[in-house]
Length: 178
Image (cartoon, rainbow, N blue to C red; front, side, top):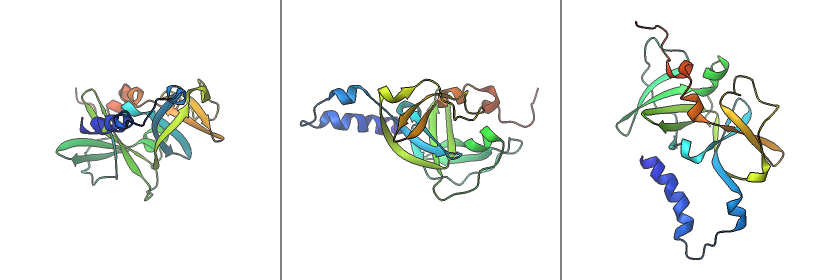
């Protein structure tokens, strides 16, 4: 909730500025959290990412899929941390000092997803949105919805809400207990 409050503060910062005037450009603008993964660029809706952190120290969880890195204590709240690229491709991603964790707080779930790099908040003209892309890996298509084309680059819109609705992701157990 605190992270959602921070993002809301960013939105309200412009409203608090008496010299700030809403422009037509802002009405036609879409903003999201940009990140890089598997050599491709993505952007997630602002409301889906609660915060961005450095990869925390994780406690491994036995009998879970290899893409689950473990659990971390983030300000008294348990965060389940997963390697997003490893989940999607089946191949463990190599460590990079630019890696970050996107924290997603959706309904009762609090998950952290490791990505190669977070590029901050990006702004796009809504007219640069296209509903279908051709350069997207088939394993990513179920989580993405269209893309923005900006500066000769495709920014695929990644919907973490779709990931959290996928039973394969939500049941990270190796063994099923009946």
